[in-house]
Length: 302
Image 1: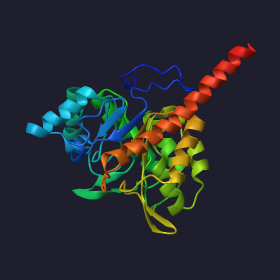
Image 2: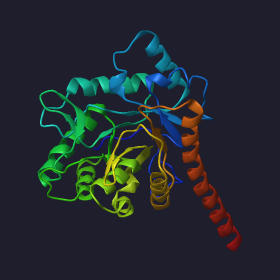
Image 3: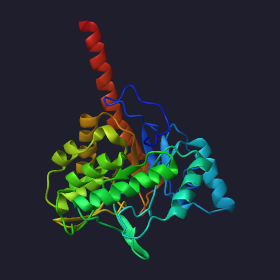
């Protein structure tokens, strides 16, 4: 039997996906622990951390994290599972993540559809070859992780800058892995935009082909313009209009999904950061208002 995801199905979602978080979230970095300490779920609906940055941490920092996880719903976005690596899975890491999830009541665990190790850490997210062999290999490793964690995980569509040994399109590879692994999707709209520039494809067409019924939440972030035809996924700048538009299109296609702002460096003052979280809320609210109006119209016609 496939692992289950904690939580209850969301009857308002067009595909019945069980979203265990909702609204607009923010990635919690250590540099933000002090600045965000007075906020509540009225400001930020949920938060995300990388478990590798916190596993084994004690003392004051551990206490600060605990204060946040007791006040906000949390999800985890891993950094070093290295699901596509030729090296064996790090079982000790997976077991530590399982304990961290239980300790802090974390509602979801997600990772990157990439790899970052091969007889040592590579310190970057490397592209998995888009091949049928890689589909079977990666899907098997995802199933193994889900079995150990005893829950479903979600894999993120990643940014990449080369496609070695490519035998299929990126969208075909992503869809094949998710289907064979029977896992979920972490939908990153900034990565779609970045890849669409770097690899010259239509981001809306790509978005339309993703399995939105498996999307547990969305990442939105900023990037760096290296050149006219090269974007670098940095999470170090404000979200641009084209990425906000892609998020809007995702809601139009799949329904309103929980959405989290990633900002890893060049972090602005809290009001500016919260303004971007509020932008997520504003887009979500438009769809909620439209849904209420449609329901009211249906009642009147009925």
